[in-house]
Length: 242
Ligand code: ZN
Image (cartoon, rainbow, N blue to C red):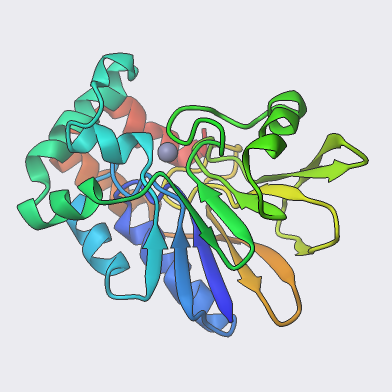
């Protein structure tokens, strides 16, 4: 089996399509593991959910998915994110709202735990430090955990009880006996200073997680965002991957 691991698509259909095409060129996949934040920020919320649902997949909820369906108050969002969340809520069809309402917070699939932010706090916690990662190893039972939320590709490997940070930069990771927390980076709004869409493929046969970056038509997404009146800082940041 080959699983496409996609996080933080954020209503960016151009980035999503580029990732799907790239994954197909690399031997395809059997199923998508979607790590939440399908919507929010970008211009194509309904189109992204519809596209995901064409594939065999599982998906968990992210903070932006909850904000778009009123499961979470946007007062804790920064102002531009809150504007985008309100816009997204107005666009979503009833069917797609129902889809988001039913998303679980955490899932186990094939030896992996899937959580948007962290297994300890699936909706809110950002796993960017070794210390936070180390604490989170106590909150899942599988060998490996996949997270999104920070939009930064990275690995924390538990080596003799210590969480060690490892870079994930278009590398092929061979799964070892050590437990790991892996973030594939963001599809629709990368934040590691590389504007290309970021994703990974887990191949069960060779037990590797391969990380890829994909160019996509950033101006096409930005043009739609401008037409829909989405906030300027959200449009600009796509150019820089920040
Ligand atoms: Zn996100």
